[in-house]
Length: 68
Length: 247
Image 1: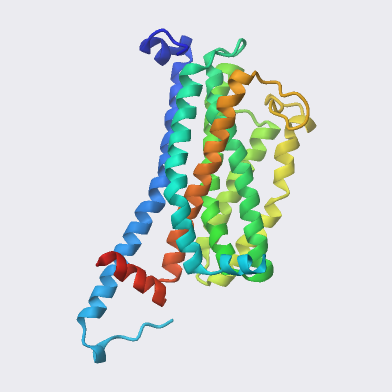
Image 2: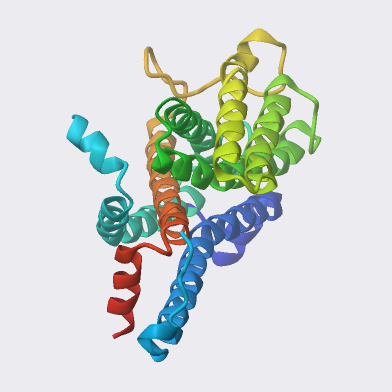
């Protein structure tokens, strides 16, 4: 490792606040890019599952016609 | 070739193949990203002129590179959807825009943070920086335009035209550091000729660029899968899929 101690790595000769904040902001954006679509897909699948279950609970003749 | 193109236009096929790609690409991306981060942050020597602030390069450059590459993908998808009315190309274009916007945002923010200790200012209306800001607005424009229309076909057409017209900005971004006097430094990595960056800094940077490309691909595929599901919600294969995952 280049730095002697953890505090030296955090301080980075005075540049630490710039470097670490830049990394922190970027990593949160990247994490969001991976997590957000996953959450959306999960939510959509749950929604569709609920819809399928509702349809399955109804007798055949009462099933609504889903418009295309 | 044509059968591949044909398959690419099939939502169930695209959904299945993207799922199997993500299964290995996603872990690989995370490992590469983590390795590159630790390498760049802690294991490289500081720059002899900029000191430690240069470490921002390991996120700034990859974000900017992939933000530009993402624009090509979006414009190409826009062209395909405009010419061949391929629905999956429209899905790809729509999926691209928010990721491109996020990466451009990262490039601009990290650039500003890097600018403070290096140039003494957070922001200058410099050619490179201003053209990147325009790129951000182009991406956001495509996102907003897609939302603005109720009619999907009209939205797709308008977005495709906007992204193609916006292509004009791309060579301007590349060449801005050569055409105008700029605070921003010219490219250090060159495909032809000697790179002006030390190998000990170049390798972690290349790793980070690769990781950002991989991350872009992962996020793009995930966005596309959600979009495919929501567009195809009423079709048999999605119903079967949902039933299968429920039981």
